[in-house]
Image 1 (spheres, rainbow, N blue to C red):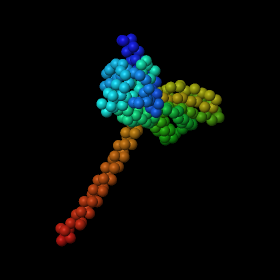
Image 2: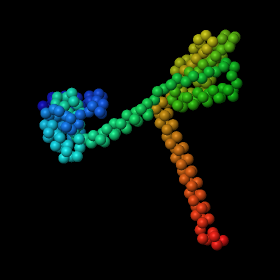
Image 3: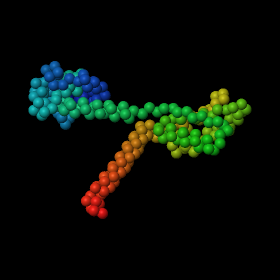
Image 4: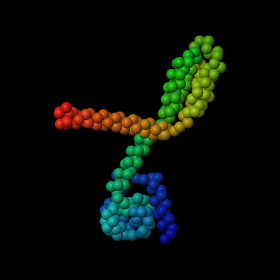
Length: 235
């Protein structure tokens, strides 16, 4: 008996990693087996019962009988609110899609002879990409005789790496390929964290704008009330 219960528990655990699509899940009268290993709504093990008895218990509790491990022998079924389960599963899937973070490789190009102002502008773009959780491929394009001065390109890339050192690490050291020299910077923060912070910032900005509009509307309404009062007419 204990061996069967252990096997059923293994099937139940494996079902969490290999869940069937919700539309294929068998519930209530769609469960066509003589008996099931029943799990209570709180996860408690009830034991092997006839499917008719399990359906009766589900009806008495105002819940559904849901087959959660159909490959077990006997199948494992659980008492739960199936409508709530479907809603929560859909919410989790939607949140997972929303939070899915695909790190992209952005590219920024520098000239070897770049003035300080242009350097700051380019560095600003690099910092923005890194803050978004993306990697940055920095490329220096050499012109003419500049190809004979690779050490100047390395110094420029090292300068950039040092100035953004708090938010990035050098994933690929400077390498020269013909007329170009490249270096790859990787962000120190995860893409998902950057997206979460960005959504929170946008939400805070929307709330601030809404509060500002509400305050403005309240002031307009207050002035209108004062202007329409009898006391204001007497004056």
